[in-house]
Image 1 (cartoon, rainbow, N blue to C red):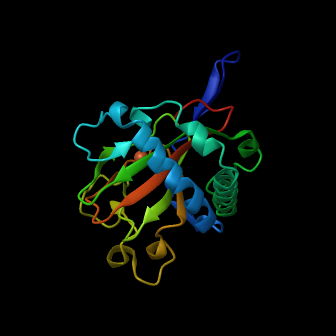
Image 2: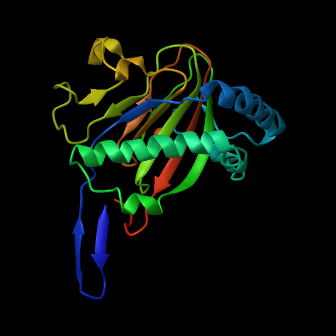
Length: 220
Ligand SMILES: [Fe+2]
């Protein structure tokens, strides 16, 4: 994160903190009931426009074929409420743990972009990040199996060491942790620059991804 005063030729660069926040969406069933059929319909209507611009991923992402798809998501009041509830709690945790001081500036936050991703069994998504966005989030709208999104810790220069990556796999983080319970109906949020990928999925999976920016900062 960069904050600077051009006039005074001064500034400070903050390397983003590493975190993965998660919480259960209270009105998940209602959101899924309305949104999943809308997504299916949108996909059907746009079948001829579907493109995959990834290098090696097997996922249908509206990010790549319809810039207007966000309207359907932005217009869903309950989805937006769920996102803001999660964001506010995420900021609360970060500030409470003294990792950041975002309570005031987070009031300027905007959801910059939003899209959906559809996986069939065998689907996957290559490693990527969401630079230059400050916060990114994933809402697991439909996910019958384990959530297998995996995040890399770019601060760990020794692959294979402890926590060079993390996922919600109970074998990795322990079965009694809150994070190992992440499944359909959860939102996760993390810094936009944090690299992540989706290993091969074994079931149908639909996610909604979004980016949140706060003003006063430019990129990372
Ligand atoms: Fe992503």
